[in-house]
Image (cartoon, rainbow over all chains, first blue to last red; front, top):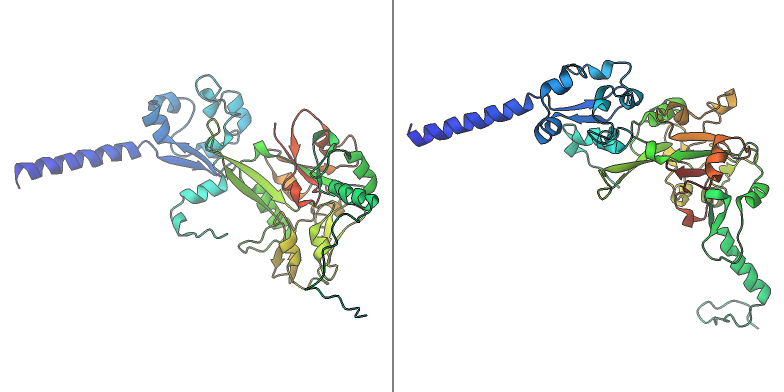
Length: 124
Length: 250
């Protein structure tokens, strides 16, 4: 192999490793409980706003998709500063009783994001 | 003289000879195209010189109870629990396009942080129902005691003219019943056995759907429709059917 090929190969490895690192943040989570169609984007919260893992995962949330199993994962808890409400209180981020559709994409939004969604022909 | 009317050669007699009383009656028909707005006043599309009020209509449509629903639209998050509850309670077939209630979606890209709105819709149990007017067999009718537009499925011939006539796309043909089906406010499946709410209103986790009785002044629905601080509207008032389902925010 030429040196140029070797460098190109190494660059490609680094890039894929970089994107693999990004996906390993946790990706998009779509909650189904207590209600369906609620999205959380790790990409937005980590890459676009620069939050670190400990900011949420030391106290507010466990890793591993367990939050939706919690019985108190309801809007009232958010209004009292639990879960997302720790930041989404109007000061650090938009208040959790505003802009509902940002997270509540609904069953329709969830269907659009699911694999195979493009095969669905929505008539009329 | 030939008494047959020759449609090809008939003359337009013009308006000059129409008596004043007939002209007045015709203009008053403008009042027939209305919807109930906040504060209980009615908005007439055609004329402003004669304002009718909801209390006039209460006398004309003395349903007791006068079932009605208010949608607090800003709370809807499209969790679709209402749709699931309706399908389960009323045995709606799992067929594309078959629904008694559904959620419409409206994109709002220009709103602050704007994404979309979700709008629940169902049969509006109209006061002047177009579907009842066009049914050739009287298979659908407005129940005189409670105002619900009912189906008599024995008489339905499946012509689907009612479906065409409905401004709210509330009707669908049920292959199970071999008749047209639509929301009836769970009158047979829930209200008749003493439940106070329809299945959809009961299932909603965000209190979007407020179901109640417009004839009672202490009812939540009455208060929401008749308060004047927040806007209350109906869908497609221009259709002239005088719906019984109202929408508000806040």
